[in-house]
Image (cartoon, rainbow, N blue to C red):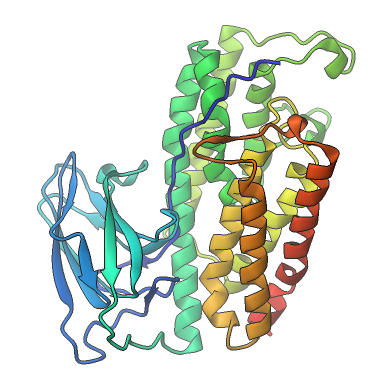
Length: 405
C-alpha cells in the first residue's frame, strides 16, 4: 500500500463567540463582555487588518477588560479573532468589517496565552497569526451573567465555531481536489487526512442537514443499493487502490480523468452547500444540541475510528480520532460553565478523562506531525485506546441530562 501521506499540514480553525460590535464571550479564557462593569477602564489596543497582515499594537495586555479597535485597511471584508492557546477556540470575534471601517471587540480576558489573527475575505485559515499574552493584573473579572445569558452565549459561540470550521474546510478541500484532479496523487494523499479534520470536528452538524453527510462522507459499506457512492471515501479508495483480495475478489478499476473531475466537482459542490447551510441567517443550535454533539463525536470514535472502519483504504483513522476528540472537547467546554454549578463532580471527571484520552492518543502522533497508521497498531494498543474512549464516553453520555435537567 502506498503510504505517501506524511505529516500533513494542519488547518486550524476555531470555536467561538460571534461578536457584534461589543458582544461578550463566555468560553474558557474570557467571561461576559462588560468592559465597565468593574469600574476599570479597558486596555485599549489597535489592530491594522490589511490585505497581507494583521498587526496588533501590543503583544500583551493585563487581565480584565481589553478592547481591540480593528481598522480594515485592506480591500476585502475582513474578520478579527482572539483565539485560545489551542488555536481552535475563538475567545472573541468581530466579523463583516468592511474596507475603511473600524469595529471594536471588547473582552474580559483571563490570564493566559492566546493568538490573534485576521481573515480577509472571511474564508480560509487567516493571516498574520501572532501570539498574544494576558498577564495577571490581580483585577476582579466581571461575572458571567445568569444562566440564560450563558446558554445564549454558548449557542452563539458554537455556531461561530461551526462556521469557522466549515470555512476552513472549503478552502483546504479545494486545494486537495485541485491536486486530485491534476493526477498528483502523492500531494493529494498528503493532504487527505489533515483536510478532513475540520469536517470530523463538526460531523454531527453535517449529519443534521439531511443528505449532505451521505454525499460527503459515507463509507462504501453505508451506501444503499441503487445510490451512487460519492464524497471523500470514494476518492480515498481511488488514491489508495486496493488489491483484488481487499476488494471483494474483484480487480479495482481506477477512475478515469473525467470521472475524477466529476467526483471532485461533486465533493466541492456539496462542501459549498454545507458552508451555505451553516451561514443561513436563521441558523442556530440549541444548548442540548451542543452537548449531544460532544457525545455524538465520541460515538463516532467508538463506532468507526477505533475499529479501523472509517478509513479502510488509507488507514488514517487516528487523524479522524484526534479531530473528533477535539470537536467533542470544544463542544463540552462550550457548556462547561453551565454544567459545573449543577454537578461539579461530573465536570471534574470529564476534565480528567478528556486529558487522559488526549494524552493517550498523543503517544501515536498529532495532526501536525502525522499519526501511526491504524493497521500498524497492535491489538493491545487498540484495546488501550478503546478503554480510554469508554472511560470518557460514560460520563459524557450524562452531560445533556445534567445540562438541561
